[in-house]
Length: 386
Image (cartoon, rainbow, N blue to C red; front, side):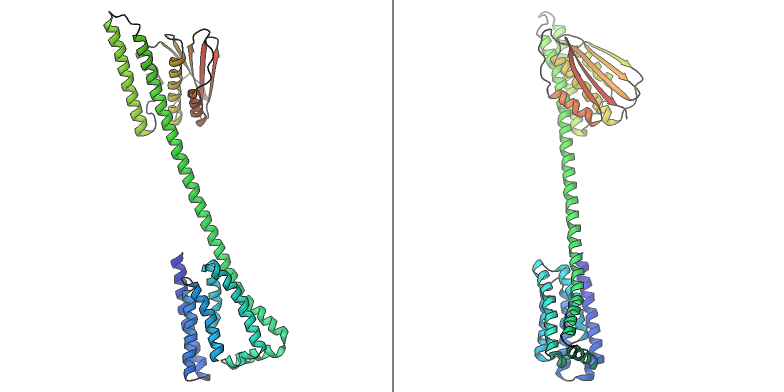
Protein backbone atom coordinates (compact mmCIF):
# COMPACT_ATOMS: atom_id res chain seq x y z
CA UNK A 1 0.00 0.00 0.00
CA UNK A 2 2.86 2.38 0.80
CA UNK A 3 4.65 1.64 -2.51
CA UNK A 4 1.41 2.18 -4.40
CA UNK A 5 0.94 5.60 -2.80
CA UNK A 6 4.51 6.58 -3.68
CA UNK A 7 3.96 5.50 -7.29
CA UNK A 8 0.74 7.50 -7.55
CA UNK A 9 2.51 10.59 -6.22
CA UNK A 10 5.29 10.15 -8.76
CA UNK A 11 2.81 9.82 -11.63
CA UNK A 12 0.89 12.89 -10.40
CA UNK A 13 4.15 14.88 -10.18
CA UNK A 14 5.04 14.01 -13.78
CA UNK A 15 1.54 15.03 -14.89
CA UNK A 16 1.86 18.37 -13.06
CA UNK A 17 5.27 18.98 -14.60
CA UNK A 18 4.07 18.20 -18.12
CA UNK A 19 0.94 20.36 -17.79
CA UNK A 20 3.07 23.18 -16.39
CA UNK A 21 5.44 23.04 -19.33
CA UNK A 22 2.50 23.16 -21.73
CA UNK A 23 1.11 26.17 -19.90
CA UNK A 24 4.42 27.97 -19.98
CA UNK A 25 4.78 27.34 -23.69
CA UNK A 26 1.33 28.61 -24.57
CA UNK A 27 0.80 31.50 -22.17
CA UNK A 28 3.82 32.84 -20.33
CA UNK A 29 5.92 33.54 -23.36
CA UNK A 30 3.12 35.72 -24.71
CA UNK A 31 3.32 38.18 -21.83
CA UNK A 32 6.75 37.94 -20.25
CA UNK A 33 10.33 37.45 -21.21
CA UNK A 34 13.76 37.24 -19.64
CA UNK A 35 14.18 36.11 -16.05
CA UNK A 36 10.42 35.68 -15.54
CA UNK A 37 10.61 32.55 -17.65
CA UNK A 38 12.96 31.03 -15.08
CA UNK A 39 10.72 32.07 -12.19
CA UNK A 40 7.71 30.48 -13.90
CA UNK A 41 9.67 27.28 -14.45
CA UNK A 42 10.72 27.23 -10.79
CA UNK A 43 7.10 27.59 -9.69
CA UNK A 44 6.06 24.67 -11.88
CA UNK A 45 9.00 22.54 -10.75
CA UNK A 46 8.34 23.34 -7.08
CA UNK A 47 4.68 22.44 -7.40
CA UNK A 48 5.53 19.14 -9.10
CA UNK A 49 8.11 18.40 -6.38
CA UNK A 50 5.53 19.06 -3.65
CA UNK A 51 3.11 16.65 -5.29
CA UNK A 52 5.82 14.01 -5.74
CA UNK A 53 7.04 14.00 -2.12
CA UNK A 54 3.68 14.32 -0.32
CA UNK A 55 3.68 10.55 0.39
CA UNK A 56 7.23 10.18 1.67
CA UNK A 57 7.97 13.72 2.91
CA UNK A 58 4.63 15.38 3.71
CA UNK A 59 6.32 18.08 5.77
CA UNK A 60 8.33 19.16 2.70
CA UNK A 61 5.17 19.21 0.57
CA UNK A 62 3.47 21.46 3.13
CA UNK A 63 6.49 23.76 3.30
CA UNK A 64 6.64 24.09 -0.51
CA UNK A 65 2.89 24.74 -0.69
CA UNK A 66 3.49 27.84 1.49
CA UNK A 67 6.95 28.84 0.26
CA UNK A 68 6.11 29.03 -3.44
CA UNK A 69 3.14 31.49 -3.14
CA UNK A 70 5.07 33.65 -0.66
CA UNK A 71 8.02 33.89 -3.06
CA UNK A 72 5.61 34.74 -5.89
CA UNK A 73 4.13 37.63 -3.93
CA UNK A 74 7.60 38.90 -2.93
CA UNK A 75 9.06 38.65 -6.45
CA UNK A 76 5.88 39.62 -8.27
CA UNK A 77 5.84 36.35 -10.17
CA UNK A 78 2.39 35.74 -11.73
CA UNK A 79 0.21 32.80 -10.71
CA UNK A 80 0.44 29.59 -12.70
CA UNK A 81 -2.69 27.62 -13.43
CA UNK A 82 -0.74 24.43 -12.71
CA UNK A 83 -0.62 25.53 -9.06
CA UNK A 84 -4.20 24.25 -8.83
CA UNK A 85 -2.43 20.95 -8.08
CA UNK A 86 -2.42 22.22 -4.50
CA UNK A 87 -5.69 20.29 -4.18
CA UNK A 88 -3.64 17.09 -4.62
CA UNK A 89 -1.30 18.24 -1.89
CA UNK A 90 -4.24 18.90 0.44
CA UNK A 91 -5.48 15.37 -0.24
CA UNK A 92 -2.04 13.81 0.26
CA UNK A 93 -1.29 15.62 3.52
CA UNK A 94 -4.61 14.49 5.02
CA UNK A 95 -4.11 10.97 3.65
CA UNK A 96 -0.50 10.29 4.62
CA UNK A 97 0.77 13.08 6.88
CA UNK A 98 1.61 12.63 10.54
CA UNK A 99 -0.97 13.89 13.07
CA UNK A 100 0.92 17.19 13.33
CA UNK A 101 1.05 17.61 9.53
CA UNK A 102 -2.60 16.61 9.32
CA UNK A 103 -3.81 19.44 11.50
CA UNK A 104 -1.26 21.94 10.17
CA UNK A 105 -2.59 21.25 6.68
CA UNK A 106 -6.16 21.86 7.88
CA UNK A 107 -5.10 25.18 9.40
CA UNK A 108 -3.19 26.00 6.22
CA UNK A 109 -6.34 25.63 4.13
CA UNK A 110 -8.13 28.13 6.35
CA UNK A 111 -5.16 30.49 6.42
CA UNK A 112 -4.67 30.24 2.65
CA UNK A 113 -8.28 31.12 1.94
CA UNK A 114 -8.10 34.11 4.32
CA UNK A 115 -4.85 35.29 2.73
CA UNK A 116 -6.33 35.07 -0.76
CA UNK A 117 -9.35 37.12 0.32
CA UNK A 118 -7.12 39.78 1.91
CA UNK A 119 -4.96 40.01 -1.20
CA UNK A 120 -8.05 40.40 -3.34
CA UNK A 121 -9.27 43.14 -1.05
CA UNK A 122 -6.02 45.08 -1.42
CA UNK A 123 -5.97 44.57 -5.18
CA UNK A 124 -2.57 42.90 -4.83
CA UNK A 125 -3.34 40.09 -7.22
CA UNK A 126 -3.64 42.42 -10.19
CA UNK A 127 0.16 42.45 -10.59
CA UNK A 128 0.37 38.64 -10.52
CA UNK A 129 -2.20 37.68 -13.17
CA UNK A 130 -0.62 36.01 -16.24
CA UNK A 131 -3.50 36.67 -18.66
CA UNK A 132 -6.33 39.05 -19.37
CA UNK A 133 -8.94 36.47 -18.30
CA UNK A 134 -7.39 36.06 -14.87
CA UNK A 135 -6.98 39.83 -14.57
CA UNK A 136 -10.67 40.27 -15.36
CA UNK A 137 -11.72 37.71 -12.72
CA UNK A 138 -9.64 39.31 -9.97
CA UNK A 139 -10.75 42.79 -10.85
CA UNK A 140 -14.41 41.80 -10.98
CA UNK A 141 -14.25 40.12 -7.55
CA UNK A 142 -12.55 43.17 -6.11
CA UNK A 143 -15.07 45.61 -7.56
CA UNK A 144 -18.16 43.63 -6.48
CA UNK A 145 -17.32 44.21 -2.83
CA UNK A 146 -16.90 42.31 0.40
CA UNK A 147 -19.70 39.83 -0.26
CA UNK A 148 -18.03 38.46 -3.34
CA UNK A 149 -14.69 38.42 -1.56
CA UNK A 150 -16.20 36.32 1.23
CA UNK A 151 -17.78 34.07 -1.39
CA UNK A 152 -14.37 33.66 -3.02
CA UNK A 153 -12.94 32.80 0.40
CA UNK A 154 -15.58 30.13 0.90
CA UNK A 155 -15.06 28.78 -2.60
CA UNK A 156 -11.31 28.50 -2.13
CA UNK A 157 -11.85 26.84 1.24
CA UNK A 158 -14.24 24.32 -0.32
CA UNK A 159 -11.92 23.60 -3.25
CA UNK A 160 -9.12 22.72 -0.84
CA UNK A 161 -11.27 21.41 2.01
CA UNK A 162 -13.12 18.74 0.04
CA UNK A 163 -10.00 16.88 -1.16
CA UNK A 164 -8.59 17.25 2.35
CA UNK A 165 -11.74 15.64 3.77
CA UNK A 166 -11.50 12.88 1.15
CA UNK A 167 -7.93 12.15 2.20
CA UNK A 168 -8.93 12.24 5.86
CA UNK A 169 -11.77 9.78 5.19
CA UNK A 170 -9.39 7.36 3.47
CA UNK A 171 -6.97 7.77 6.36
CA UNK A 172 -9.67 6.74 8.84
CA UNK A 173 -10.71 3.86 6.58
CA UNK A 174 -7.14 2.56 6.43
CA UNK A 175 -6.83 2.79 10.19
CA UNK A 176 -10.09 0.88 10.62
CA UNK A 177 -8.89 -1.86 8.26
CA UNK A 178 -5.59 -2.02 10.13
CA UNK A 179 -7.39 -2.30 13.47
CA UNK A 180 -9.66 -5.01 12.10
CA UNK A 181 -6.69 -6.94 10.71
CA UNK A 182 -4.88 -6.61 14.05
CA UNK A 183 -7.99 -7.78 15.91
CA UNK A 184 -8.30 -10.74 13.53
CA UNK A 185 -4.66 -11.68 14.12
CA UNK A 186 -5.06 -11.39 17.88
CA UNK A 187 -8.24 -13.48 17.73
CA UNK A 188 -6.48 -16.12 15.64
CA UNK A 189 -3.58 -16.17 18.09
CA UNK A 190 -5.98 -16.51 21.02
CA UNK A 191 -7.80 -19.37 19.29
CA UNK A 192 -4.50 -21.08 18.52
CA UNK A 193 -3.38 -20.66 22.13
CA UNK A 194 -6.71 -22.08 23.36
CA UNK A 195 -6.37 -25.00 20.93
CA UNK A 196 -2.84 -25.74 22.16
CA UNK A 197 -3.92 -25.54 25.79
CA UNK A 198 -6.88 -27.80 25.07
CA UNK A 199 -4.57 -30.30 23.38
CA UNK A 200 -2.21 -30.14 26.36
CA UNK A 201 -5.12 -30.73 28.73
CA UNK A 202 -6.31 -33.73 26.71
CA UNK A 203 -2.77 -35.10 26.59
CA UNK A 204 -2.35 -34.74 30.35
CA UNK A 205 -5.73 -36.41 30.91
CA UNK A 206 -4.83 -39.30 28.60
CA UNK A 207 -1.51 -39.85 30.35
CA UNK A 208 -3.28 -39.69 33.72
CA UNK A 209 -5.85 -42.28 32.64
CA UNK A 210 -3.29 -44.68 31.16
CA UNK A 211 -0.82 -44.46 34.02
CA UNK A 212 -3.53 -44.44 36.69
CA UNK A 213 -5.19 -47.55 35.28
CA UNK A 214 -1.91 -49.46 35.01
CA UNK A 215 -0.73 -48.43 38.45
CA UNK A 216 -4.06 -49.49 39.97
CA UNK A 217 -3.67 -52.95 38.38
CA UNK A 218 -0.02 -53.21 39.43
CA UNK A 219 -0.82 -52.09 42.97
CA UNK A 220 -3.61 -54.64 43.29
CA UNK A 221 -1.31 -57.43 42.09
CA UNK A 222 1.51 -56.34 44.37
CA UNK A 223 -0.75 -56.23 47.39
CA UNK A 224 -2.27 -59.63 46.58
CA UNK A 225 1.25 -61.05 46.33
CA UNK A 226 1.70 -60.42 50.03
CA UNK A 227 -0.89 -63.07 50.81
CA UNK A 228 0.57 -65.80 48.59
CA UNK A 229 1.99 -68.84 50.31
CA UNK A 230 5.75 -68.86 50.63
CA UNK A 231 5.93 -72.37 49.23
CA UNK A 232 4.03 -71.46 46.03
CA UNK A 233 6.67 -69.90 43.74
CA UNK A 234 4.50 -70.50 40.66
CA UNK A 235 1.78 -68.19 41.98
CA UNK A 236 4.38 -65.59 42.86
CA UNK A 237 5.90 -65.78 39.37
CA UNK A 238 2.43 -65.44 37.86
CA UNK A 239 1.76 -62.29 39.89
CA UNK A 240 5.10 -60.81 38.88
CA UNK A 241 4.44 -61.67 35.24
CA UNK A 242 1.08 -59.91 35.46
CA UNK A 243 2.75 -56.85 36.93
CA UNK A 244 5.34 -56.86 34.15
CA UNK A 245 2.62 -57.21 31.50
CA UNK A 246 0.66 -54.29 32.98
CA UNK A 247 3.80 -52.14 33.06
CA UNK A 248 4.62 -52.93 29.42
CA UNK A 249 1.06 -52.17 28.39
CA UNK A 250 1.21 -48.88 30.25
CA UNK A 251 4.47 -47.91 28.57
CA UNK A 252 3.05 -48.77 25.16
CA UNK A 253 -0.11 -46.77 25.78
CA UNK A 254 1.84 -43.76 27.04
CA UNK A 255 4.08 -43.92 23.97
CA UNK A 256 1.01 -43.95 21.71
CA UNK A 257 -0.51 -41.02 23.57
CA UNK A 258 2.68 -38.96 23.32
CA UNK A 259 3.24 -39.67 19.65
CA UNK A 260 -0.30 -39.35 18.32
CA UNK A 261 -2.16 -37.51 21.13
CA UNK A 262 -5.02 -39.96 20.64
CA UNK A 263 -5.82 -43.55 21.49
CA UNK A 264 -5.77 -46.06 18.65
CA UNK A 265 -7.25 -48.90 20.70
CA UNK A 266 -10.98 -48.97 20.04
CA UNK A 267 -11.72 -52.45 21.36
CA UNK A 268 -13.42 -52.28 24.72
CA UNK A 269 -13.37 -56.08 24.90
CA UNK A 270 -9.58 -55.97 24.80
CA UNK A 271 -9.55 -53.53 27.72
CA UNK A 272 -11.78 -55.85 29.75
CA UNK A 273 -9.75 -58.88 28.66
CA UNK A 274 -6.48 -57.28 29.80
CA UNK A 275 -8.02 -56.66 33.20
CA UNK A 276 -9.11 -60.29 33.48
CA UNK A 277 -5.62 -61.43 32.50
CA UNK A 278 -4.26 -59.44 35.39
CA UNK A 279 -6.31 -61.57 37.80
CA UNK A 280 -9.41 -59.48 38.35
CA UNK A 281 -12.86 -60.97 38.12
CA UNK A 282 -14.86 -59.02 35.52
CA UNK A 283 -18.43 -59.89 34.60
CA UNK A 284 -19.21 -58.31 31.24
CA UNK A 285 -22.46 -58.18 29.28
CA UNK A 286 -23.55 -56.40 26.14
CA UNK A 287 -27.02 -55.56 24.87
CA UNK A 288 -28.02 -54.43 21.42
CA UNK A 289 -26.09 -54.41 18.16
CA UNK A 290 -22.73 -52.57 18.36
CA UNK A 291 -22.61 -49.55 16.07
CA UNK A 292 -19.58 -47.73 14.64
CA UNK A 293 -18.37 -44.70 16.60
CA UNK A 294 -16.40 -41.79 15.22
CA UNK A 295 -12.89 -41.23 16.48
CA UNK A 296 -13.82 -38.73 19.21
CA UNK A 297 -16.59 -40.91 20.66
CA UNK A 298 -14.53 -44.09 20.33
CA UNK A 299 -11.64 -42.54 22.24
CA UNK A 300 -14.01 -41.11 24.84
CA UNK A 301 -15.69 -44.49 25.38
CA UNK A 302 -12.34 -46.22 25.79
CA UNK A 303 -10.88 -43.65 28.19
CA UNK A 304 -14.04 -43.34 30.28
CA UNK A 305 -14.35 -47.12 30.70
CA UNK A 306 -10.66 -47.27 31.56
CA UNK A 307 -11.08 -44.63 34.26
CA UNK A 308 -14.24 -46.29 35.61
CA UNK A 309 -12.42 -49.62 35.96
CA UNK A 310 -9.45 -47.86 37.58
CA UNK A 311 -11.71 -46.26 40.19
CA UNK A 312 -13.47 -49.58 40.78
CA UNK A 313 -10.16 -51.33 41.44
CA UNK A 314 -8.82 -48.53 43.60
CA UNK A 315 -11.90 -47.89 45.75
CA UNK A 316 -13.84 -51.15 45.45
CA UNK A 317 -13.91 -54.16 47.73
CA UNK A 318 -10.65 -56.11 47.43
CA UNK A 319 -11.22 -59.30 45.50
CA UNK A 320 -14.76 -58.27 44.57
CA UNK A 321 -16.07 -58.78 41.05
CA UNK A 322 -16.41 -55.86 38.65
CA UNK A 323 -19.64 -55.80 36.64
CA UNK A 324 -19.50 -54.09 33.24
CA UNK A 325 -22.68 -53.62 31.23
CA UNK A 326 -22.76 -52.15 27.73
CA UNK A 327 -25.99 -51.16 26.05
CA UNK A 328 -26.32 -50.09 22.41
CA UNK A 329 -29.53 -48.18 21.75
CA UNK A 330 -30.70 -46.37 18.63
CA UNK A 331 -29.53 -42.97 19.80
CA UNK A 332 -26.85 -43.61 22.43
CA UNK A 333 -24.25 -45.98 23.79
CA UNK A 334 -24.25 -46.59 27.55
CA UNK A 335 -21.56 -48.25 29.61
CA UNK A 336 -22.05 -49.04 33.29
CA UNK A 337 -19.56 -50.29 35.86
CA UNK A 338 -20.62 -51.68 39.26
CA UNK A 339 -18.29 -52.62 42.08
CA UNK A 340 -18.86 -53.61 45.69
CA UNK A 341 -17.51 -51.43 48.49
CA UNK A 342 -16.72 -52.43 52.04
CA UNK A 343 -19.83 -52.39 54.23
CA UNK A 344 -20.00 -49.40 56.51
CA UNK A 345 -17.41 -47.44 54.55
CA UNK A 346 -18.25 -43.75 54.55
CA UNK A 347 -18.91 -42.14 51.19
CA UNK A 348 -15.93 -40.09 50.05
CA UNK A 349 -16.13 -36.84 48.13
CA UNK A 350 -15.88 -37.12 44.35
CA UNK A 351 -12.31 -36.99 43.09
CA UNK A 352 -10.73 -35.55 39.98
CA UNK A 353 -11.37 -38.83 38.11
CA UNK A 354 -15.12 -38.22 37.97
CA UNK A 355 -14.58 -34.60 36.90
CA UNK A 356 -12.22 -35.72 34.16
CA UNK A 357 -14.73 -38.27 32.85
CA UNK A 358 -17.51 -35.68 32.87
CA UNK A 359 -15.35 -33.26 30.87
CA UNK A 360 -14.61 -35.95 28.29
CA UNK A 361 -18.26 -36.85 27.95
CA UNK A 362 -19.49 -33.28 27.78
CA UNK A 363 -17.08 -32.69 24.87
CA UNK A 364 -19.04 -35.25 22.79
CA UNK A 365 -22.46 -34.37 24.20
CA UNK A 366 -22.50 -37.18 26.76
CA UNK A 367 -23.31 -37.41 30.46
CA UNK A 368 -22.04 -39.24 33.54
CA UNK A 369 -23.92 -40.38 36.62
CA UNK A 370 -22.25 -41.85 39.68
CA UNK A 371 -23.90 -42.94 42.91
CA UNK A 372 -23.68 -45.43 45.75
CA UNK A 373 -26.57 -47.82 46.41
CA UNK A 374 -25.88 -49.45 49.72
CA UNK A 375 -22.63 -51.37 49.37
CA UNK A 376 -22.48 -51.03 45.57
CA UNK A 377 -21.02 -48.11 43.64
CA UNK A 378 -22.52 -47.54 40.19
CA UNK A 379 -21.07 -45.31 37.46
CA UNK A 380 -22.90 -44.90 34.14
CA UNK A 381 -21.68 -43.04 31.07
CA UNK A 382 -23.94 -42.16 28.17
CA UNK A 383 -22.54 -41.22 24.76
CA UNK A 384 -24.92 -40.04 22.03
CA UNK A 385 -24.38 -41.68 18.66
CA UNK A 386 -24.97 -38.48 16.68
